[in-house]
Image 1 (tube, one colour):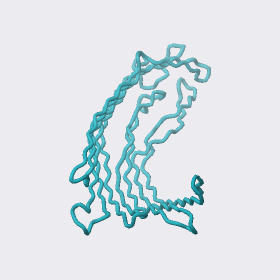
Image 2 (image 1 turned 90 degrees about the horizontal axis):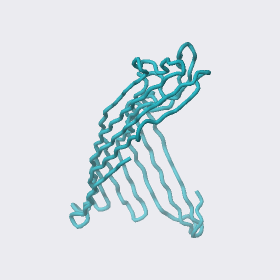
Image 3 (image 1 turned 135 degrees about the vertical axis):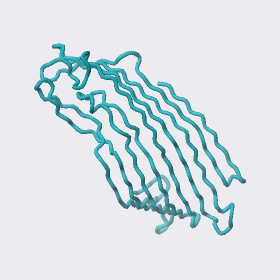
Length: 246
């Protein structure tokens, strides 16, 4: 596995603007082939596979103190960030029974399957913070993230080897506050959120008939979309230094 990252950080406008930007790359592959020997309902199966993956991305994020532009905006900070990623996955695999029959449906006459997939997705964040008092912060944030797609090396059916990227878009609004309760230090974090998932990735069990015998496998699949909404609240009390009650 090889990885490299170059990053630039800068403070501008009397430190009112903080910028981070960079590029990232990762390449991973096996040296030769990996091999596994299993028994499927009494029939020995020899599987060999050679996975390769590559991830590349460029990104930038900036936080600006809006009070630098106007006294009326003292305490407000705006954060914006963007990342674009490219993903590549490849898998060469073969699964053959001791009888010489293929254990991978959809394979060629040599029981071989070669699959590759390319993907590219953006991620972003946009948030506004307001330091209402030295001890109270209000914020609202919108984000988009994703989890890269991939390949199931243990799949018994060629068409089920690949799965798509999972994406999520969410909005969160909340407050963080430090205060005192009967002389004790206290901290309150409260947040409400709304998240929308697409092509959600889940591990599911499948039973496939191989040569008339049922064979069970676990595969990562795209199970559809989901919407999650919720409210989180946390209270921390510090009665004495070194002791926290949550």
